Length: 287
Image 1 (cartoon, one colour):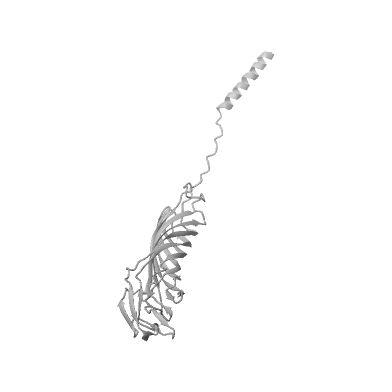
Image 2 (tube, helix red, strand yellow):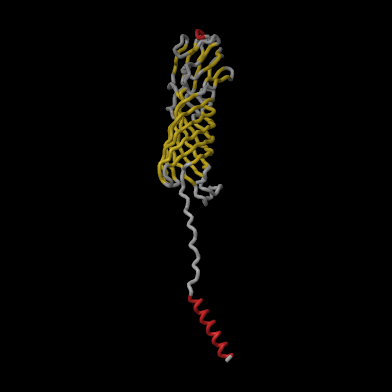
């Protein structure tokens, strides 16, 4: 009897185990979907740049003047020679800050504003002159109106179109600059005049992928750009074209009595130059 009862219990246990095995197993929940962020150019940025600047005016020949005692500059007839345009190019470097707004993430229109300040190292010897005798002058000007610069800066709008991480843009706005000693005096005196004008240009900017070996921040915030600018600064100088002021304060020009123009180079009224530069920016919002 006991054997029959134990066999019955064992049979019931096996049947229950088989039934449990036939039950559906608990299905693991699906993985949580995390969307990949879409890159946008919107945000504040700052960076630095370096490049090359060069004059855009046609080269001028030398200006040679015969100066007599009637000018009050010399005791005996003297020849003054100003060379033509020289050293009109050189290094340009500085930094920039700005803000972009992209209307549609991914690809779309981008508008922005950028300000930059640049050190300039060209054009320092363009106003030098040589004379056959001593000159009694307070200030000596280059009749060609050519000047050098120590620095310049711009405040520009930007309008472009983004192809995901590539931005093609045009730019333009206000420009300013000073330095370089436009008006060279004796002995070793010069006047650095602040100038204003305009700037136009364009460029291409690219946002580095996070795994790029150039992307030391390992984020989508690092961008590289290459751009070209044309800068025109109006000298705004009432003495532009004059070449000296004598000790009595009289402005001497090429039309003054006692001045003979032997050879005149092209007159320059503006400081004009172009800049080609590369830059790196860091965008603070990260995407």
